[in-house]
Length: 474
Ligand code: ATP
Image 1 (cartoon, rainbow, N blue to C red):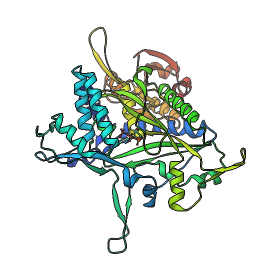
Image 2 (image 1 turned 60 degrees about the horizontal axis):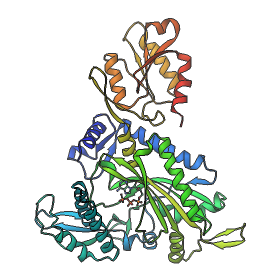
Image 3 (image 1 turned 180 degrees about the horizontal axis):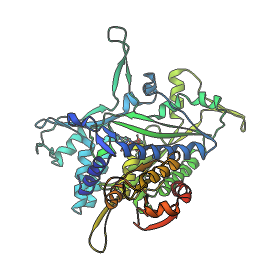
Image 4 (image 1 turned 90 degrees about the vertical axis):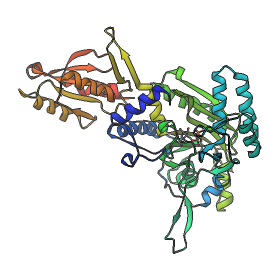
């Protein structure tokens, strides 16, 4: 793990953003819990996504489908047969690895040594073998490249096998007729199976979209890089149903819309890039990732996929229920094509945190750490801080809290030096600290201290609501 990521992970834990799950039992790999400020930040991200999908587009509505779905769903979607990762075990350490990741790591190391061309050759050789499902060939590649196990240091590898990423469980008691069902590995299928329900009941006309936020589960073999790759995570997906033949135009326009959304949240353009997939999934006729430069390099945050009519057609086949739409404009029945935008809420959270984490030192060499979050995302919008615990200042402070708390998440704190209290708010990214002092009692003004500049200004209490509202709108 690199140093910057380490700092971010410990900051997240220390200041109430993210903890390892069930930490008192030493945690559970690739599962995490969100703390007091983490849940606020995550909710803000989800709400902004939801509102920019459903409220800003009069042709997009939301749903909330269940995690459990009829098992045939995953037959139809292709997940039972092909939602696999190639894995390999080291016989000495008994550790399991993703074969493709071992090779990717080697290519990365080659690149660092300046062997860019060799690295490219290795990756393209692997791509071809995986496409041809030549698992023995993938193993040969690992052996020929002399790739060693990071734990045991040996090259004593097993065969490469496919490993399905879906978690399964039993419905019904074991004594009765139980049947195997899966925890959904993506939220999209809940949208597809409800396509006609939503289209009819919300009276939608193609082109239209359905948005959803919900948990998804994948038994990831390589679980690392903090909340970047989790076994239980949350997805925010939008499936946009379009007339066949128009899908590539919609694909381009959604890619542009989503990229500008990330910029509007405060991600600098040079930290974002798009990456077109050369190798397309079985359901897609175009696909790209929006990537962010994490401390461990440029990695996918969001996928934009032109999924054709693959899913609806397959559900029609398996369910024997027509999945067609009658388009009055062209007087035709058809299965719509689908353009999807798919982003992980946790990965978006990690991007936001990495981008906001700021360490600065001033002219005197004093360093300051703060989270430079867009005020709309900040977990706490303002902290009300009476200078002393006496002379009626706490009462005045609480009066201000009661004016603001119905619209904003506010913290009230009276203990400790004012400097320490400012520092604490910097660490959780609070944009405004509002100090209440003796002058406040005389003229109803307070001092606002701004997080990013540490500058202070005197403003009337009556202006606070408007100031915060303006800064925290998106
Ligand atoms: P990756 O290549 O990183 O495994 P993917 O291409 O399998 O991702 P998709 O199936 O396209 O990802 O999922 C859409 C989005 O869901 C991703 O862009 C990512 O933000 C999020 N996501 C997928 N898997 C995970 C995971 N294990 N943990 C957290 N977020 C995830």
